[in-house]
Image 1 (cartoon, rainbow, N blue to C red):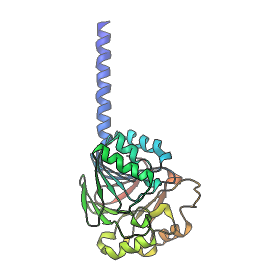
Image 2: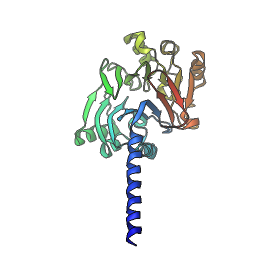
Image 3: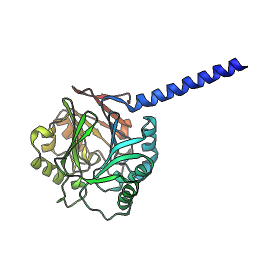
Image 4: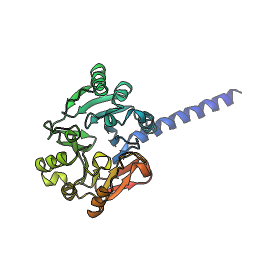
Length: 282
């Protein structure tokens, strides 16, 4: 009987070790990964390099389970940076929950001032938890493991929240990724005026404003020349996203696009030399 108990204890210990090893393996990413999470008609993108974790936006409150599930599946308990591109509910809806339930290093927000209860509660949660809250400004550079995150534009003069979206570029090795939030034509025009062509040429583009025709204008696509485009939108959404005119513009520049409403969470991986779409999630 004692021998059986000892054997059982050994087996239990081995299981615990394997579980811990698996969690560490899931948290550590070789190369750089971008996962556009399937959060319906909202936005949340997970960036990982090594043990570093960033979240761009936090989805709408109704998609809380999807975000919690994604973080749990990847054994993520610490978020180095939560970046909220602009203060709309479909982008900040779960930010308060994340701040209250995860170790968040830094909160980066748009310069657009919004008198909205949901957004005010986010800022209050950051203050209560002692999380540094920083208002984004163009030209700032941050590290994400071995990747570099540069804020290209955060237009404090924008008249609408969408066009005040924090626009950022992530460089990893020879590859680059561009995220424009919900920036529409005015925001994209401001970006084209403010940033040199070398900063806009990217392998990957997160389509602006859920694939609306008001985003990803021809001039921006010609500057970015993306190989991969990810579109975050809800199935059978009331807006008709992604709009056919946008998809036609993507076809015209030879970009391959994938949609969360049809394929679920979208995963892209860079080894520093090239970016590939991963059918199997990391």
